[in-house]
Structure formats: structure tokens, C-alpha cells
Amino acid sequence: MVFPFVVLLLCIALMPLFAARFWEHHYAKVVISLGLVTTAYYVFGLQHGSAMLHSMMEYLSFMALIGSLFVISGGINIRVKGEATPWVNTLFLLVGGVVANLVGTTGASMLLIRPWIRMNKYRITQLHVVFFIFIVSNVGGALTPIGDPPLFLGFLRGVPFWWVIQHVWPAWLLTLGLLLALFYILDRRNYGRAPKGIATANTSQETWQFRGLHNAFFLLVVLAAVFFPQTWKVGTDHFSLSIGSIVMIAAATASYFTTSRPVHEANDFSFGPVKEVGFLFIGIFLTMVPALELLGSGQGIHLTTPLQYYFTSGSLSAFLDNAPTYLTFLAAAMGNAGLDVGSADHVRMFLASHAPFVVAVSLGSVFFGAGSYIGNGPNFMVKAIAEKAGVHTPGFLGYLFRFSLPMLVPVLAVVGWLTLR
Image (cartoon, rainbow, N blue to C red; front, side, top):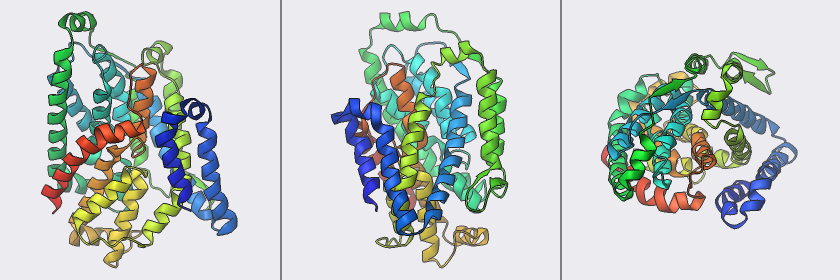
């Protein structure tokens, strides 16, 4: 039953290359159909429909956070003054990586991708979009539970809020530094090829501008809702929606209707990107249930060192949603120590005795989420927004073989070897 998940991954990777028109018009039908195959097997074959209901509850919570941050950030318009030199671009990405820990990788991505495209409009390339995904949409958010969904799941299971930053900041700083240095070198070559007259003409009229700042309040509401107890929910024992998710949806609704049309038009705002992510991830959340159960059972997984957990959880996070992957490998590591991930006391005991394993799973899940477009929710959103703005972005395989494998993976391998061996 892992087969529908594999087929879905292959469709996402290959259909835009070989059947782009068909995929553009029918991807939702394909995704839902594959999800229904797995659902039917669990409901009618295994009599275990509760597993699918649980996955759908996680999906709704995931989309409530992703969707609300997308809508609210889309109501804030930022314009940057000055020419986008390599130093300015590098500083922008550094700030974006730090901000990701305060408003989440989704919030930072939605807030900054449009000004990033505008400030580089006369020379923007695939490189700019991909490194934005690497740094702002993924690696940057590794310091706090707010930063990335996997760390938030750990926080809900009992990992103290400040434990993460205390233990992962050296690896975060090293990874961010290496990626920024690599970007600067590559962007400097791109900048040197751009005629100076074009640069002046495209940047001389730019000014600093911030519109829709009342939406900062709604961002704070969403971030506060993240900390609502999971026991606060509406529904039945079998299917429910958390109060936090309801508050997020309400904040996004209020933001949308209180933001003026000129601000949305300036951001070229539409629901297209979040709609695409919503359909793709409902298929992923349904079809990945057998894969996660297989991993969680311990079958085929015999890991003994933090470095092994780092690379294995990372490899799967690049193609599975990184949040459940984090939880699966945390559960596997704790299970090997005779502890239960469902107990907050056991989690704290494991932190005290096996901290490097938790660090390895945390870093692997967050960092390698940048490995493909489906590794983390914001990745596809950034791609969709960039394409709507007329920016040429790499396809699934192009992203993987031109950027992820030759650029990101070597950096992450060096970081893992230096910090976890």
C-alpha cells in the first residue's frame, strides 16, 4: 500500500515534464483518486478508518496554519529601496532566515517572497528562487518550535521551547553561513552579467514602503493560537478540529476582508498557490499513512548513531512531509531506548540521556525539507507565487538534480559530519 504514495511522487515529478497540460487541468483528480485508493483499503480492507481520520485531522491543522499565514502575509506589502547587489541579497536572505523563527517558515516565505522578486526583477533567475526556499522556507526556521512544523510537534510532545535553540544553534549557524556564502558567490557572477544601465533604470524609482501593517496583529493571533492546548477542540472523539485551528482560520478571514484591494493587487494575491498546496498535500497526507506506519513499526530501520538518524530522517523529509517524519523517527529513537513518545515525562528523560539523537532528527527533518518541493509546505507556495509573477522556476527534477543534490546536500553532509559524528 506504499505504492499509491510512490505513484503520487512520480506524478508530481514527471507529469509537469511529459504531460504538463493534462497535469495542470487534472492534477486534483489524480491526487484525490490516489488518496481514495489508500483510504478505501484502510476503511474496507483493514477496518482501520481511524488512521485516515487522524491523518485528515493533522492535514486540517497543517492547512489551517499554512493557509492562515499565506492569507495574512499576502495582505502585507513591502517594497525595498535600492539596488539588489549580491551583498544586499545575501543580507536579505540572512534576515529572512532569522525572521522565519519568529513567524514560521511559511509566514516568512509569504511575507518576503514578493519583495524578493521585485528587488531582483531585472536579473532574477532560478537561483534566487531556489536559495530563497533553501534558507527562508526551511533552514532558517530551525531554532524555535514556531519556526518549522516538525519542531512544533516536538514542543507539543514535551520538548521545552528553548531546548531547541540551545542545542542546534551551532549547526544552524554553520549551515546558514555556508549556504549564504555559496549564494553570494553564485549571485555575484549573475550580477556581473547584468548591464549597469538596466540596473539603474529598474531600481532608481524604488522607495521603502510598508502597507497593510494591521495584519501584523493577525499574525500575532495565529502565533498565539499555536500555543493553545491541543485538548481545546470541537468535534467528537473520532474527528475534531482544534480551537487553535479555528482561531487561525478566523484571523485569516478577518485579515482578508480588512485588507484593501490595492494592497492585494500590489502583491498579485490570489488563492491559486494555497489551492495547489492544499490538493497536493491532501493526497500526500492520505497516501503516506502506510509509509509512516511501516517506518514507525521499526521494520527495516536499524539505526544506532545520531548521524544515521540525521541522514535517514532527512532523506525521507525531502519527499515526505517533514512534520510526521520528525515524529516517526523521534518515536523510533525513543522506542529503541524503551521510552514512549506519547509521554512528556519520557520525552524529557530521552532529552537528558540521548540529546544528540533529538538534535539529529530535528536538524534532519528541518534542513532536508528543502530537498524537494514537497519536503515542506512553503516550498510549493514559493514556486507557485514566483511562476505567477513570471519567474521561470525549475521543475521537480530540475530542482532536485540542478540545485538540491549538487548544492544543498553537500552542505548538509558537511554540517552533519562536523556536528553529529
